[in-house]
Each structure stands twice: as C-alpha cells, then as structure tokens.
Image 1 (cartoon, helix red, strand yellow):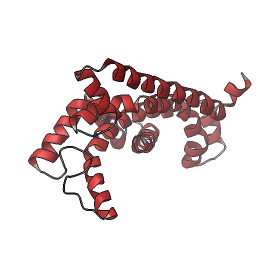
Image 2 (tube, one colour):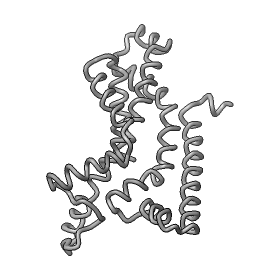
Image 3 (tube, rainbow, N blue to C red):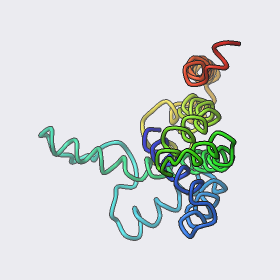
Image 4 (cartoon, one colour):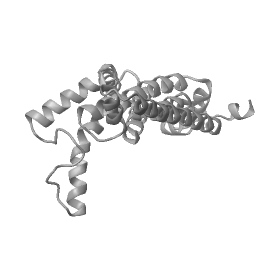
Length: 215
C-alpha cells in the first residue's frame, strides 16, 4: 500500500502537470495496462517468468525450508519471497492512484486560483506544490483509504498463487473447503476493516478541506 500510494501519487502529479508530454503518455499508457490486468493473471506471469524460467526469486511460501538461522539471513530470505507478491499488488493498485491523481491535477491546474497565482508571478513548482496538489488530493484520499480497506481482500488471489500464509490464503482455503464458519469470520474481518478505513477517510477529508468542516 505504501509503495502504491507513493508511486501512484508522485507519477500522477507529474503526468498531470506535464500533460501530453512523452512522460505523461508513457506512464498513462503503462498504468492503463496494469489497471486492466487481472491480479491473479499478473501474479501467474511473474511467477512463471521470474520464478520458473529465470529462477531469480522463490516460487512460493514465506520462507525457504533451508533458510539461514541468523536474523539477517532469515530476513533476506523472507524479503526474496516478498518481492514478486509485492510487485503484483503494487502494479495493479498504483495505476488507479496515478490515473485519478492525474485527472485531478489537470482539472485543478486550469482553475481560477492557479491562474491568479501565475499572474502574481509565482513559479510553476510553487503553484503545483502549494496550491494544486493539496486540492487535487481530495478525491484521491477517498480512493486510497477504500483500497487500503480492501487490500486484504484483494490479497486473496495473490496469496493463493504464491502460497503465502496469510488471511487471504486462509479465505481461499475456506472457500475450497468449504469451511463456512471460517469464511464468515474472514468476511467479518474484511467488512470491519473497510468500515474503519472509510471512517478514517472521512476524518482526513475534513482536515484537508475546510469547506467540509464548515458544513
């Protein structure tokens, strides 16, 4: 989630501010591809290419059976197992943040306050960082927290493909079982997380937008 937020918001800001540039066309087209790709399909492709053909990374699990016993070696082994699952989830999620942030930046860049700031002689970087970005963040905040809430639910397919022990794989096993009480329990956890994240999004939205606080 952290990688997707940083990557998506930063690239979306730059792409929207440099609209129709080569950078904008490249990141927008690539993000549309990742956005349209099913998560499980991307996970399988990465698994076959980098885990099966090239053998750069492990193909499943959280840790190797012959993992080193020292803390540093054990940590590096876990990180090597995390790389492909993290890339899969980051690639799909960051693309949505990028496109929403890009459209918000384009809309805010043509607003009257941005034109007034340019008339005052402010530099483009000052206009972007102090005026445009704070306003463009408003619709993105809701999307970010909604995705954080659904992040665990979205990890079901990824954890199943990479055999990663977690709540997502547990849900998959409950479905294939079937284990209905366990499945109900995981759904309650998913629902609670999404409700809490939406509540936090409303609180942060009030902090970012003074108009919401006055209302």
